[in-house]
Length: 461
Image (cartoon, rainbow, N blue to C red; front, side):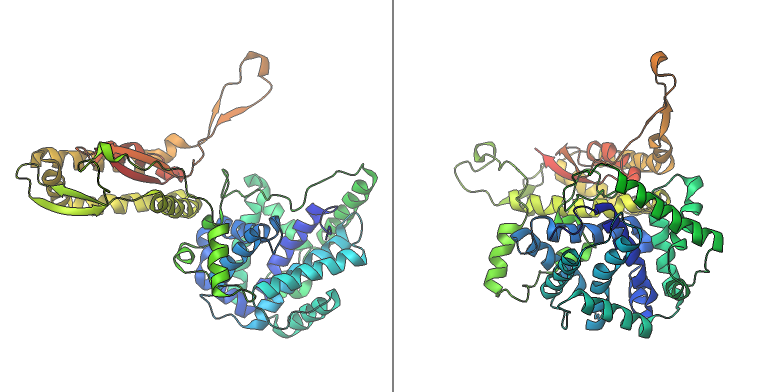
């Protein structure tokens, strides 16, 4: 099944256009609008859709990794009551949309074998998603696709909201002055029934004529160029995950707390074994040496806190091992993607709300620090106040300090431009001293937050 191997860019472009067709159905767009995922974190929502499909086919749909990706997709969809016919239509758009785009604007049309391979991939995906009535052939997918659109396409305000949010994502990849033109060019290749359902007016006739001609001219030019071998599946460029991703990063937060169900052709025992084999290995976290802890020679499972002044026990906490740490980092990595996708103003608001909550509970926090460390209450309160100052400074200034800024290029590269860009690193771990649990841990972590980097903290005694 090498259908996209020779036309990978056109295949991906056709998939993007098919993405918009789903919004012509009010029942689908209302659900998407209700989740607000495109409004809150549209780039992440778009990337997650592309990446889950990529992960399903990267090693083969029936590989352990492909099946794990399918379980994850089913876990996300399982929260909602989605009619089977809507699943069928969305699946059909992923088969029919790329084929029609390639035949119209690709450097060559797909042959019959490639067309049927598209249908086979779609059918297997439908089987793994437990969709009923999936067609066996491309003709069946095309008939289902067209019949559904004739019956279900209709305008709804939710259609336009979700489509506009998606267009904002697609056009955000271009420089700001070109985004309006990019949106108009995208709309110029959409058919009238879809535009009507989305609530967009047709573009001026000269634009509707010129854009397809330019795309066909591009195809004619590519036809004359030497063939470029390209690997498929081609690794997507995910703007939300500049440093890579795992399945645990993809999808909304709540999805990771739901147990994945077995695929239709799996028994529960097969599913458990497959999940264990295909899950990402835990991060290499070194287990503490018992010699460095009280009670050497025994297995330490709990950390006991006592009042330094009296020795009275005040709390017990479990000592987490590599698996617990790995899960915590995975949760933080997933949260980081959503956090980085928020506008700067929203991240600043969250910091200010945390500052307000910490200031409101200052006495209780200071008392806890004093009891746990044995330091005077005044010193503990001062430590919390310093943390509040760091939070206030970061909320006011971090976005300005960390924004892109131009830098010099030197005498021999004066004809070039250079800029310094701060990018989120992902999850950052902070190990702080036991006797200063607030400022040394939070102060270095607060500044990167407005740029989208969360942190995970640990205490070192």
